[in-house]
Image (cartoon, rainbow, N blue to C red; front, side):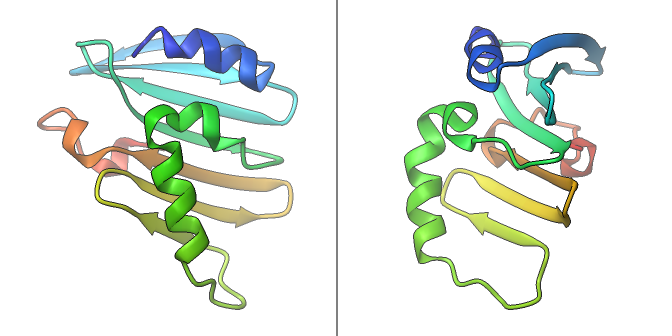
Length: 125
């Protein structure tokens, strides 16, 4: 829920720096010393996606909320290809992608079932 943005600010030791209303959803940006996180919020108040970029990948546990355990289990069972800088983990309910290189790490996580109609996954960035 949108209320989780407040707890994410605390978990990331971040400040909310912007709020942008787009066609069918809102994006709230949180900024810390090491990462910028954008949270995508449906009109119902549900956070359906996050995206980030920065010096580090953020701790996804607080950001993924109820999807965190499912993601962690999938990560433990996912194989890693040597030399690949892009990693995607897809479970029954959530997709998490990470990529980048040192000092420019990026990623996104989203719940396909919650993405507003008419919105493309490519808008989550």
